[in-house]
Length: 140
Image: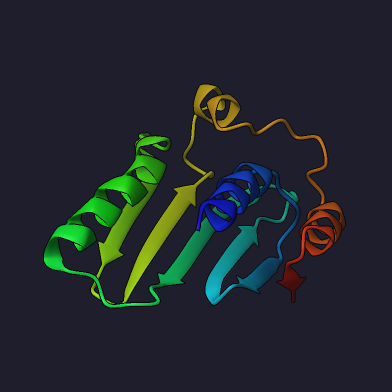
């Protein structure tokens, strides 16, 4: 789970660069865990939004206490993105934990973009796709 979480956070930082008036969906499944990132770009080749969904099924059903612990742990991911333009939700059940992060770059200040690692370098659609695929994602 830690490996997928690290890849998830790294991809989140990676995903904050943009391209133009296209939609890019990248997915990865590893050890039963799935990660999907959907990025939308404007006509100026800048990212408008990014939606990330991570699902981590559990091998055994969790008790209520264990669910609360996992929910709290996964909430740390959300605390890294405490900005008005970022919505992060964690939902943990007995069978799985889901994290959903939506980033609105179109309404984000330059300072917030910089804090999230947005640099403009490597920001073209083809560059993002190539990098994601090199990291093991399947993109379409």
